Length: 194
Image 1 (tube, rainbow, N blue to C red):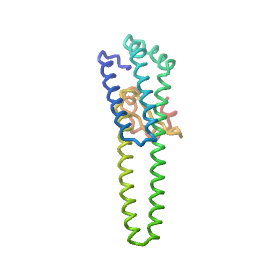
Image 2 (image 1 turned 180 degrees about the vertical axis):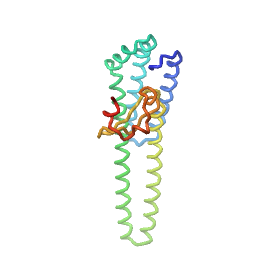
Image 3 (image 1 turned 60 degrees about the vertical axis):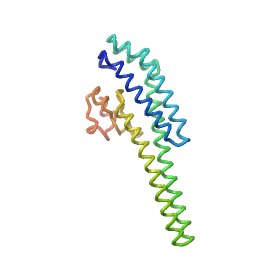
Image 4 (image 1 turned 30 degrees about the vertical axis):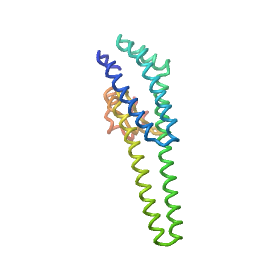
């Protein structure tokens, strides 16, 4: 938004629509337990886009960048972004817990199968491997969708681990803050911020 180019509003709308479509697709492929989080992200995304359209972009177009930043803070746009990222983080945590649970189930199934004999054990081991492959494929697809959303949005996003280290910085953040994402990855956010 800070570029003040006349075509920005259309570009913003275009990327907002793409992001909405990606989240709708994600809602189709995620497990039922995760659909609520995806829907919460969608609701917040719609509120964020509406706030930008109604209040923030007009100020930027008028050249009132400080006013736009103030409205972003006061209107809750910044909080909406934080809440969306928190929910994405929660989805990732759930994905890892599911993977861990699946691995434990596969190990348990394998042990039980070995008790029933080598032939039965091989059959269940093969089944566990296929199950693990299918779960891994789905999790990889979900992770790819998350990365695509973060990397292709026109909003500046810097993802910071709980320990304060930068995990990911998208292209928009690189452009706006003049940072090299690969160079700052792994560094403490506080050290890079100033």
